[in-house]
Image (tube, rainbow, N blue to C red; front, side):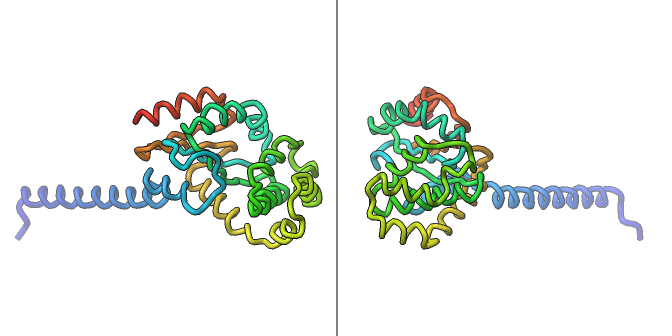
Length: 225
């Protein structure tokens, strides 16, 4: 016996609803897999013990992804970072976290390794500053390993310890992890900054933006905006 028309229509509507629901579920699952939720992104950005400048009690954390050979990073450092540190970091309004995002080549990775090796002696930020102050054109040789050793000597580091750490390969996993995290977070250029407020809200600032842009964003996040 042929099925009545009305029940068939109801069945088609139910089947269609099920299919739509499955499509939405699959799409949502894919989105969750590819793009972390803000809370997961916050956890990832702050995981581990990355180099940090400023008070742990600051209401806003600024995570910078950069490359020591990146001209835009160097330009921002040399024109904006002094006032950025003075107005935001030194005042306790924010703290700065560094994560390398090396893409200019092997010398970028070597520079990151050297900075981390200096960090073993409590001199990460001094080495970080020296790299940007002495930055020259990417892959011109200024950041080759021999020159990085000279930078360490210039800072008066224990060279036996520095060379051992620098040449150990112990930072490879960290550097690769930072790069993967940057890709996961959507970094497409350096510098890219993620500003994390006390309520977990995240603001992204990409490129060499003026220090005033950071001040405005920090104020808004601190006020719950």
